[in-house]
Amino acid sequence: MPFELTILGSSSATPTSERYPTAQVLNALGRFFLIDCGEGTQIQIRRQKIGFSKIQHIFISHLHGDHFYGLIGMISTFNLLGLKKDIHIYSPSQLKDIIQPQLEFLKAGLQFNIVFHPLNFKKPQVIYSDKKVEVTSFPLKHSINTCGFLFKEHPKEANIKKEYVKKYNIPIPEIIKIKRGAGFQTSEGEFIPHEELTTPPPRPRSYAFCSDTAFHPPVAEIIKDVDLLYHEATFTEELKEWAQNTYHSTAREAAEIAKMANARQLILGHFSARYKNVSPFLKEARAVFPNTVAAEDGSRYEVGE
Amino acid sequence: MPFELTILGSSSATPTSERYPTAQVLNALGRFFLIDCGEGTQIQIRRQKIGFSKIQHIFISHLHGDHFYGLIGMISTFNLLGLKKDIHIYSPSQLKDIIQPQLEFLKAGLQFNIVFHPLNFKKPQVIYSDKKVEVTSFPLKHSINTCGFLFKEHPKEANIKKEYVKKYNIPIPEIIKIKRGAGFQTSEGEFIPHEELTTPPPRPRSYAFCSDTAFHPPVAEIIKDVDLLYHEATFTEELKEWAQNTYHSTAREAAEIAKMANARQLILGHFSARYKNVSPFLKEARAVFPNTVAAEDGSRYEVGE
Image (tube, rainbow over all chains, first blue to last red; front, side, top):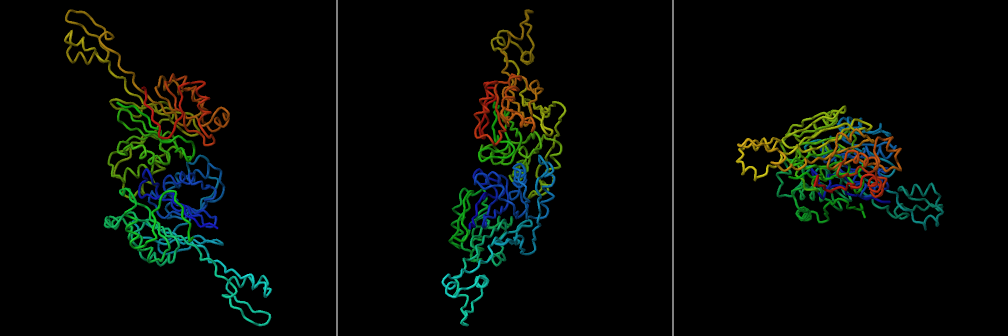
């Protein structure tokens, strides 16, 4: 099952001629989570050939325009396409008031509900959970209320070894228990431990999105051992003071968070338009955390592979 | 002096992977008029290398999202770029209420004034005039209040023939009168008519933007003899009923307006995404009005050349 991230936009503040503002889609086992929604997101979604009807959950990290100005266009397009399923928006509570006057001007009344889920900026909180995936929001440190998001598979069951099932003719209810951690008592009274009966399950995959934020070490604990980490890097160390004043991070700071969190891979993004290319970001981050890449619009990343 | 139209977006309702929603820039003798502002307009403006600081007048034909969802992003970017000049928006009056809640969330307070000029949907009205150019709004026939816009140079003065100035030693105050239409009385009492003294001025150039509208013949009189006419053509005749039901035009209807108006050239746009290419639109329109082209994002047209 896929666990794949697609970058739709990677610029900061304003779009450039090459980069759209922040937006990403995470395909987590067939669930398409839209993460931030800068202007032009719907255009990028079309270019990436992602079906609009697959998107039902939208996560908005904060209310700076480059992270949500594409939302009203998305909603309008959902409506024009005749989609009927509810749309869930996880965002600062004020978003509802901001877009309500616009919703009233949509060509026809909305044919679906928009369910707003206000974010908690005080502490981490599970905001979505289903059979296989869980999403946790966590506060970041920006000039306005901002959250990051951690997307994680639930732990999987162990794989039982077929030869044992056959040898002891293990009944199905017992198999289910074994997969979940139990051992097995044979008819001869012998106890076979769980570890012998099974091979360990694949590690649950996880992706963390650290939107606009100053260097904020408490994040590392929350996203501990994450497979893939996106962390903003608006500036390089040369402009560290600017980063501090605007509550943004440098590439080195992003890398330090990745290192502290024991992440497997780091993606940098949200580059200031004043940089002509991403080399200085990569150089700086890789000195601290070697497995670092720079986001490009349209690039895709398999999580945990 | 330039009088040049740049198409920024030419799709209808939703963007496609190749066309942005409606937006155009008219460079009228150095004034950069932005006409409609669909999502992604600021991205297209960057790509066309048009300076944001040149744009101070924005004309919004109506409040369907594909004609104004890019506005808040534009305003936000003007602000982030530190621009200070007032922005004038000519639009349905409700636009102010729609974007006000968004303006309040801009990163910093706005550093310039936004001056709203409500459109008149009852009759044509001059909404902008300066030394050289005049803009008139005129009502169209759409499912909600919608205006078109006519951009026109003021009539120019005639050119006085130098040999007459020399021959009769015509003083400057007389030259000014002659350029504006007067004749000249020589010291011998001979009257030389205006037509003999001058060569006629270049014809004032004009561009008309007919945004979303059903077939609406009264428009032809208002834009009579226009050099360049943009007229929406969402459908072809095959889907005439759809066009009528949604208050849009077919390509043939657009061409009929161009013919009635005695336009020089017609640009079709606002194509429904269901058409794979523009050939059927062109074929249909050219049968009625041969000098027809199809809008493409990024294409430029010299007006009256």
